[in-house]
Image (tube, rainbow, N blue to C red):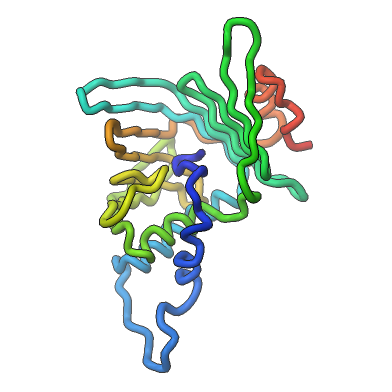
Length: 234
């Protein structure tokens, strides 16, 4: 979900990500001086801005393009919502490309639209997702699995953004990051653009409209056709 696929096994990287919150070394020697473009500093910066969005509610409509290895292009519209409500787990919705997925707490729903009535498959999504997207980015960089660099800032959907590129340097690509990933966030953490290069295609999402402080009224039209309106926050 989001620009970063939230099915990533983030817990596997949480230990490395925790290094972002404290000193990198624990000896009595002075900590090394780090420049603003040092990978750890960039990872901290990306993690911080991504996690701001995890603590907010928003709904974004994206223009989606898939570039295939044979120079084909698939275009569509994708809607992503992230809602926080007091005393309840976050609600994540991703709709587009003929599919609908929603996750709340430890339950996940994947829906399709057959000829007669929509059909949703419910499954356990594992432990409740308390890990934030910034922990995934941070773990990927601090573990030396991915490199990171700052990209030129872009103006997207009327918003200024901070942009970063992550590139796989070793091991198997992580879901949602692929071999190469570009991520742009607004200053308050709304994902505005993502590019993920996979083995056979590159997927690009660019925000067209951004709605902050999204709530029940905003997501009910997305949930009701699938019979999942009970998941909307009160």
